[in-house]
Length: 359
Image 1 (cartoon, rainbow, N blue to C red):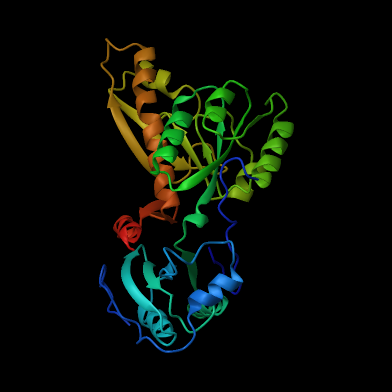
Image 2: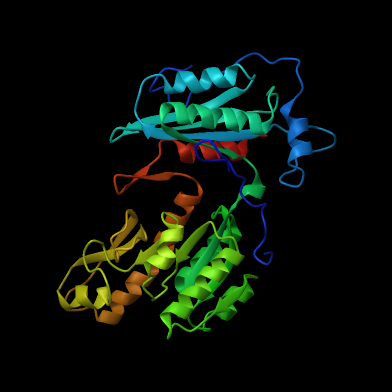
């Protein structure tokens, strides 16, 4: 991934778990940004400059297309699409699909491009787009479509296995488009679950909170975690952990936030005679259970019949599914936070599905 204003960086190579102008509103249309030229192909230069990052060939001697997604976000203004599409056209880059919308004054756009025959190097392409971002005051990121660019996911757990098991199941099935690189805990109980899936498991007791969080920070850095998932991790993270991973920690809470934050939410809902409750996947902030909500789901309590254990059982049946789906949305780039609220990006699910089906 390439990002920022005036600088760029690449995501680490994929590693398995055991290794350390168009018109506004024209969503979903196909565009040609310039005619093909006879100048040198970007594919060859990518192969030389980024050897090992991905394999630019597919089949016997055939060069596969090199696809990327340009992500744009910032204050809405005129001419953004035209500016970017003109820049691409001048470099013989084809725009294959585009999705855009304006939410709360923020312009969001995802543009699928074919850079196989581009007449500039990858570095030059990204640097030019970042310069445009600086000029118009928008964040522009470029993500190469490569299976080697899956994000690295660290999972934090305590003793309950159901959320971890759901994440592992979805990872194995391919629904989770990232790699589970480690499971970290304050207990050793779930070691067999992680290791049965081939995922490194490490733990450190939480009796000494500072020492435990130092362990977490050290291990997260060691495994180069892009995303941290709290899968029924029964500890409150301090700002020392939250700040370095701001916007990159997802938690599952067993209530319909903002109701029943904190401890024992199922028991409190049962004691209050609540008839509908559920669970919430949300981003973690320094304020307890107050981060932007990603997904929620509900279940009914049969008041006077259900016991508190019945309520917990119903909740556990939902928690893993909701958490895993929220993680999938994040990894797919389908969500963005605007003014403290999670907004679903237009068309990303369709774009990604179509992208996976392309030759």
